[in-house]
Image 1 (tube, rainbow, N blue to C red):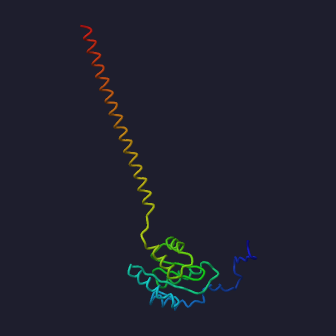
Image 2: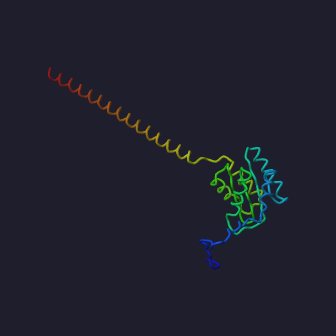
Image 3: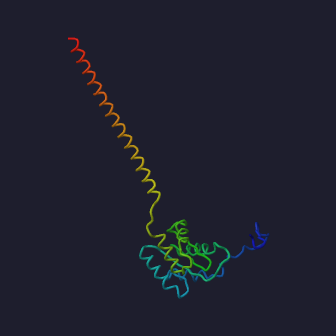
Length: 198
């Protein structure tokens, strides 16, 4: 269900200039300066809570930068592109929040962890709550399920080997008992035969 015709540009006409980024209206120099100074670029009503989170992250040894924008962008990757651009200037981890989404970039956490953290944010959360949830999601200890799986496989293998060895030992013992019983029976038969012969 397409609301209208779609247009795909496969190649720019000769002499055409490259299109400007959809977020070229942002003052990246001012945002970078604010991030280097306080770690936060946000409206005044949200800045205090975000600065507290940046301070907590710094106390934990993490370089966290938070940006809250009021612009909505048509390209869904715009916030991630902004975060990547800012992260290349300030380092650490950059979380960008806007009305239509969020974007992340980090030299400390993997893209997978950051994407998982962004999907765990409660719908309708304000930027401070969303940033707090994302930060705790990537920094809190998690269960290493690969390790658990490998450990369980090893336990099963070791259990199978021990069961097999115990079965072999029991069979040998039973065979030895049967042999002793057969030997004792044959000795009895020989004694009876010699007693009869006398």
